Image 1 (tube, helix red, strand yellow):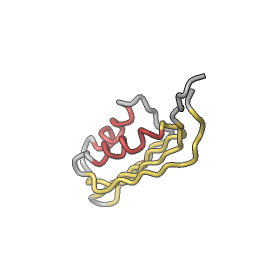
Image 2 (cartoon, helix red, strand yellow; image 1 turned 45 degrees about the vertical axis):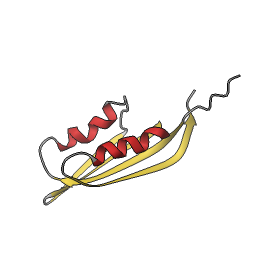
Image 3 (cartoon, helix red, strand yellow; image 1 turned 120 degrees about the vertical axis):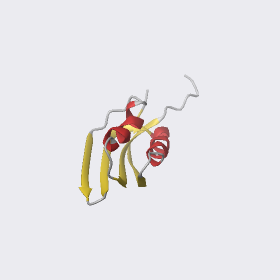
Image 4 (cartoon, one colour; image 1 turned 90 degrees about the vertical axis):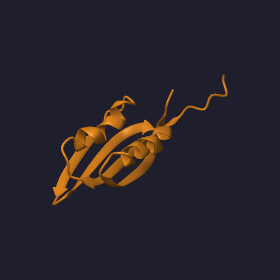
Length: 93
């Protein structure tokens, strides 16, 4: 038996408010794709000159939540990023 403590998987939801511009949605999904994370749902709405996108995952490594949120905040035109962690889904093996 090892002292290895597996990384917990958590449910997470990211809400991004940004200026509307072509390519925004693909740029929002890029931080997930480069970490081999597949969102369970993606929803985007436009309100005038702003867009709100929500990306939800049923399970992702806890250590990646702040990394993805930081990457989302670096996208040009992003006004605000909210990241919410949910319950621990399970411990990774």
